[in-house]
Amino acid sequence: MLFNALINSPVFKQVKQDIPEKLNHAYLFYSSDRLLNENIASLFCYAVLCDTNTPCFKCDNCRRIEMGRHPDLIVVDKPTLQVKDVENIIDQCILKPVFCDKKIIFIKNAHTMNEAAQNKLLKTLEEPNRNVIFVFSSDQLDRLLVTVQSRLKKIYVSLQNFDILEADFEKIGVSINVNDLDLTSIVEYSKNETYLNIVEKIKFVLKNLHNSSNIPKLSNDIVVSVEEKKLFLAIMYDYFSRTLKAKSGYKDREDDFVKDIGSQYSIDALIKILPIIQKAYYSLYRNVNFGYVVDNMLYEILKVRYLCK
Ligand SMILES: [Zn+2]
Image 1: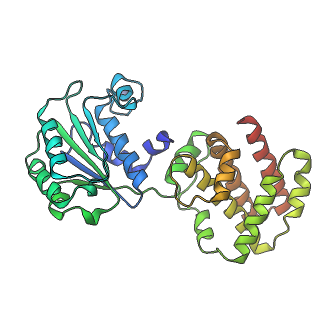
Image 2: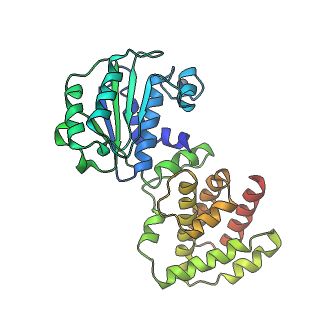
């Protein structure tokens, strides 16, 4: 999991400002992406209990959470939650925290509480215990009672295409501007025959990218029209960034080609390759010869592949 990238995401930075002084008694992390909600919510739990509130992943509290053995973090993850489950949870609130000054009840997929269970919990949310923080995650907001929602600090978990990558680019000294051309938006609108042809070409190139001596022939084989050159690089970028996302735990838009790239390139390699493709893409705007751009790009990708083995 690219926790570091998530720690650098604007949504996490924002919610972290509450720790420790401005903590609310209950939070709801929501969006249509279940895993993302859970990951950001989980990072938040780490940060609240961490000695340094970072989270650092090194202190005793962080390590206990990592091993799933922190007495002050109760994680509830059930397909359905009935009134008796909520009663159990409420009983836990009475016990004082052991290691920290706060105890967290983290309910994943909070919408799995049925209506009666939610009503049962409402009273606890209305009269919070100052030692206890509730953390909910949900990708189905409409299944949570409005009365419950009104008691929570709601955090919409959005992750722009570039949020996660931006942090990684920074690490290797490349800064990108989110307002620059969004390569993936080009791809979204062009899933036609041209798109499919280009994907086949990319597959062919990656399959045959074994040593630097066959690069000139490979780039020569990719004869695409003027309009398709940018598309070629944009689609390639899209595939590599989807692969990075998939390998980092976000399984959206994962297909066989994504899996195939994922089996050949490590996360480290993918992080290094994305700016290489992006650089190639931008150099087309400076009217650099396409063959030369692709040669260079493939050569650099090959280098990364060897270095990251
Ligand atoms: Zn820590």
